[in-house]
Image 1 (cartoon, rainbow, N blue to C red):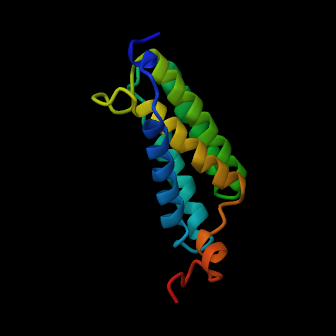
Image 2 (tube, rainbow, N blue to C red):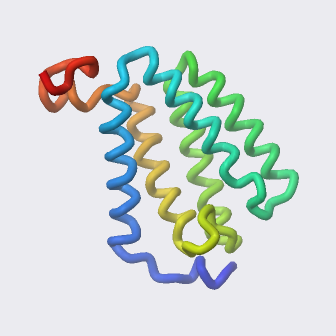
Length: 145
């Protein structure tokens, strides 16, 4: 276990990543379907490559391949995107414990990423509905009027 993984996690450290995932959901809600699903799949594929030099050697390439496959499946199915974000959460936790954070100069970045990723996974498991339609009774194409 690395020294960074023994840092005390504060409410702020856990709340800020939830704000990031909420902002991501809000911004993605502006994208109309099916472009939202395509963008989400591409975004997941990019996130899968975030740790390619993360210290787990060939396992990093295997993880990237699995996420790429899920991203491809995500072009048709939001559940595949959600599963990809859950797996990315697990990978974040592994890197946090190993001591190789996603942002090298920010020791808690991987655990923050894990929290953010779970927020995204929850939204994708719900089918990635636009929050603007739910909140304002309008569609994603015209959230402001």
